[in-house]
Amino acid sequence: MKVILLRFGELFLKGDNRYLFESMLIKNIKNKLKDETFKFEKTFGRYVISNYDESREKVIIGKLKQVFGLYSLSCALELPSTVESITSEINKLSIGKKSFKVFVKRADKKFPVSSMDFAKHLGGVILDNNPNAEVDLYNPQVEVHIDIRLNGKSYLFYDTIKCQGGLPLGCAGKGLLLLSGGIDSPVAGYLVGKRGLEIEALHFHSYPYTSEMARDKVITLAKELVPFVGKIKLHMISFTKVQEMIHLHCSAEYMITIMRRIMMRIAEQICNKYELGAIVTGESLGQVASQTMQSMTVTGGVVEIKPIFRPCITMDKEEIMKISKDIGTYETSILPYEDCCTVFLPKNPVIKPTIDRCEREESKLDIDALIKECMFSEEIIEIE
Ligand code: ATP
Ligand code: MG
Image (cartoon, rainbow, N blue to C red; front, side):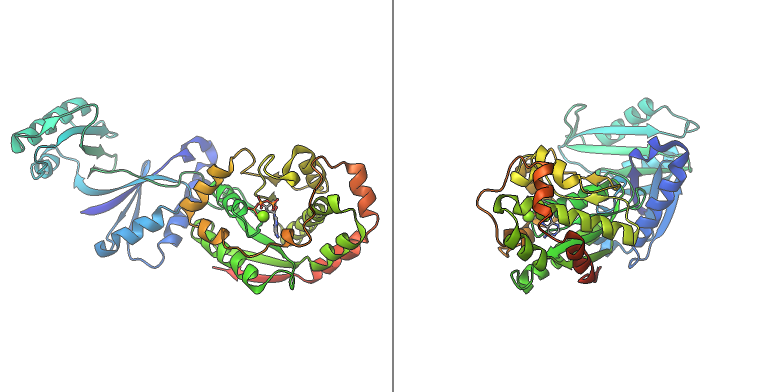
């Protein structure tokens, strides 16, 4: 019988919590395949998907490759764990002149032959049937894997497909992603998702300075994250008034710093309102003036309780771009629609802002009233 064999990685490390993690992973897998017919079986250390529509195998594998917590998968043949049945399957193998290696893994120690001896035996069978083939233990062209499991069944496969790794979505709780239209923040959302954090997203727009297209771009980015992080509640907040007021009253070099401080305060309020446990940004150390250590001190400093996760903090732009291409958000991110941060952009933003100066600039504004107005402008879009 043809099956898909699923392996999970880090789950093993979780001791008593393992059951919780596993049930979450299984739920996520089943949910991912909700439009497919299939049978799901749990054996020790592996999951097996069978009875699926073989013409949809590629689609199913594509979906499974998006599930956080899965480490790798293989399309395999399920066989009874007997010397005869495995040997008879290997008898059919035709590999021409290729080099090969047989890998036997024996979880079931009741299987009567040792892994090493069985590998030698099967290698002999392959050589008998393929006289031009040769064994290559170091760099084989064909890898023949036999995985003898504890459930009385063995799995024969030739390829292992790498999956996302990480931890099952949901096991780390839920956070709020500050989603701009740029390259970095969607990547940040993907990366925290990979550690099990579900997300809602918050976007600040400056309509009518920013266009309808800029808004659609953010919606598209959120949609592109959904296959990995699941449904996203996208909170849209109008930032226009805040920017106008800062522009009018504050020193130009502090404009972005003060904007960020207000964004962070609003983010924390949204977290409190919707019971979200952390703020996530796409910041990367030193990438721009607003992402220096001093800038992050004063912008992060207004957040009272929630942790701020910055998964891109140590990455080069190149590394972030690579992930964004891999997950499919890059092409959308580079669309040239203006972001709220480019409206009224000062020529020389401060690189080392100080708290004192921030507070002095902010005293020229009615911050509480501005934040209230922003919160009032909130619009929610359900992205799925
Ligand atoms: P990105 O590529 O994510 O836009 P960036 O390199 O352009 O990042 P900044 O513009 O300095 O960096 O933004 C830093 C972070 O602040 C972003 O990664 C995002 O998390 C948040 N952010 C910036 N602008 C907005 C916005 N309009 N709405 C929501 N969050 C934003
Ligand atoms: Mg940006």
